[in-house]
Amino acid sequence: MFDFDDLDDEEEAAAKTAADERLAREAAEAAKKSEEERLRKESDEAARKAQEQRAKEAAEAAKRAAEAAKKAEEEQSAKRAAEAAKKAEEERLAKEAAEASKPPSEHANARYSSGMILESVATTIMRAAEDMDSDIVLRLAANSLVQVLEIGTGPTGKRVRVRARAGGEEGWVSVIAQNGSLLFKAGAADSTPAQEVQQAEDRRKKEQQEAQDRQKRDQDRAAEEERRRRRELEEQREAERRREAEDSARRQQASASSPASLFNVGDVCKCKSLVLMRQLESLSAAGNSVVGRLVADDELEILQIGTDPSGKRIKVKDQKGNQGWVSALSSDGSQLLDVTRVAEQADLFKGTGQALGGGSPTAGNPRAAALAAAERRHASAMSHGVGEEKAKQLRESSQREAMLKKITEVYSKKKEDVPISLGSANLEALQKHWDHLQRPVEPVSKPEPAPRPAPARPSPAVTSLAPVGGPMQTPQMPATGGVQGSQEQRELLLQEAMVTYNLTARQLEALESLELLGFELPLALEAFLACDRNQELAANYLIESQANLEAPMPAGSSITLPPGVDPMAFGLTRLPPVFPGPAPADVGLQASDREAVRRLEELGFDRPTALKAFFACGRDEEMAANRLLV
Image (cartoon, rainbow, N blue to C red):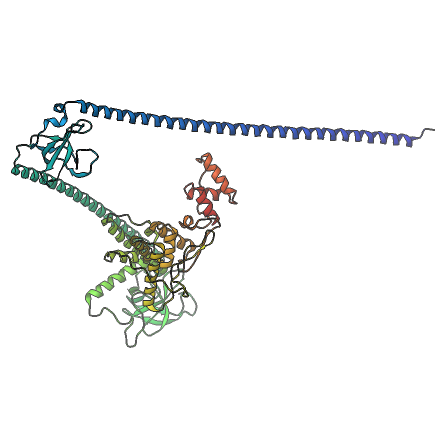
């Protein structure tokens, strides 16, 4: 009988064997492919390295060829220059030999004789002896008269001894130049002293006329500059008038939509007609009873600007002390209140026995009263339509622009450039700089060095810069008391700085200018020394540091430098690590610039930040890296 179980076992074994063989073939094929892929990669890597090596060798060969060509060109140029110099020297020696071989009657000075009067054609050098290497006695100007005293016998054949008619100096001159042109002309032998005086007078008149012409040209330029300045001032005034008109239009528009916005808390108003004072702001609120009836000419103090949708409700206080809400406009659109005094002009409702608004400081003085009224109108115009803080900012901005314009005019009159740092200075710094410009200029004399303190006592001298990688300490002042002591501290610090750092008088003036920008003297001295005694760099450094830190740096603070950075090289600026604004496009970057940006990215920064830093630092990779790592 046939056993089917044995048949199933054989088929299963055959299937298993076939599967094992298939898996073995697949593993062999995979290993073969892996080996082929590895060999291909090794071949590609070897080819790439060979190509790079060949490119490197080609570049080095090209570099060596360029250096060899450059060296050959330099040698050729030096050879040509030497040959030209040798040829010129040979020509000069041949010319001198030819002159020496000529008989005395053919020499250039043979046409002159003792006693002749000559007139110089151009500036001529008078020497002490006939030798061309002797000392210089005088430089004769053009058109100078001389008298011949002696004819030279030297090999050049062109030297004569003369006496200047103007000063009486005697010496030797050449009658012809190296190129053969005449240095003196005859024809003045018969001139008399009167003729010489006339010639001198003619020369003086000519010089005077030239000076007058120059002065007229300067005056014309100054007049043109003045006309240009006036045109600019007129354009600025016209722009200011346009801005004022636009502000007025905006205020009118704001008053139409919200009449209460024309008033500020603290203003004093006067009623123009009957006004009802209610307890609550909303006119439609229940229980909003009348707390007072105000008649014409009653004065009110504004306590609060309402937020009612009508935009015309204001909380006020009357002369009796009653408080309530009134409307700035009536239902027909007529104005119910007039501002008689703004909040900044007087302390309101203060003072025993005084009327509403306090005493008037301008009583009995019409001129002062008119000035105060003009100031109130200006302040009111600046305040209407904007908030109190915004109005203050507008006033400060206007005052700053006016002060900067005055400083610019002073520098224009001096024909000097305005310091770059003033463009970002605040109003207080500009005012100090203006006071400094108004001070009379006095010569600065170098003070005597301060006596050195005893060894046991700590020296008040300015501290030096820290080593590389450490903090740069601010120079400290010795502690003394009172205003006089503060001035003594300043003088002592200046003397010690002059002795320790060898500051000149001009550098002391630059240091005082930095101090007038609003910075402490020790901090100004630190920045001045760190910026290699460059006033503009120090001013930019101080102002940028103040702006970046959003507060002035206090005296005695220190600046910590990155490790390995030279304090003098780093003292130019201190910027935040993030560069604002969008990243510039890198389409126009050269290969070297792309490599520099890539190296900045390797420091740990993304590409937009690296690009912004690279362009902000003028494509200087080292400076960009320092600013990113600070």
